[in-house]
Image (cartoon, rainbow, N blue to C red; front, side, top):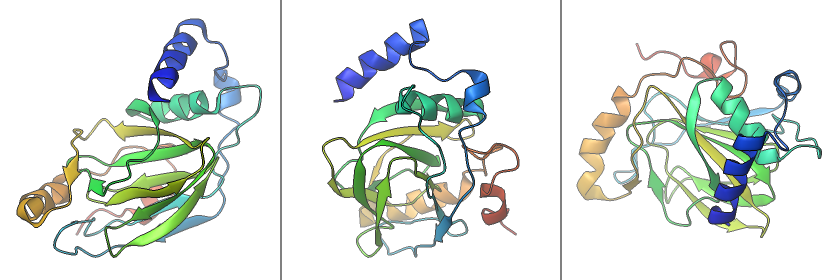
Length: 202
């Protein structure tokens, strides 16, 4: 699926086919129910010491006239979250110690466990958005065949992929604390709900 989506993405970028217009893009976000979940450092997965995982339910309308993955790509990029990809969520536990991550659900459904082995399994559906602060453990537990995610990262971070182990935990925990808060919410921009829930560390 990843190779096919890569080709599709490149074609859309070149031709504009099935991508939302700028005017249309601005009408697609909708502020609805938001879940905030905090996870403790379990000695293997650091999670984030201050900021919660945010789940924005049905945060983006996905018209049939456009590619839903393109909607998320363009929306995230317009708010400074870049290096986007199209795929699923890895089925093994991992986290990012040097960057935050956003995941927009373009198609299908999945159960994703956040927070590590003792975390919480959350069902995600098309139109939902998950905003993961650095250090948040995540892995896919089950997914529909059509499941497709668009992921992206704020420009203030550096991508890395960490496997949850006790050996690397201490070093990565320190890195997580140093990742700055992004300048914009990936969906709603400068006035988004991220800033009400991710307060600067005192």
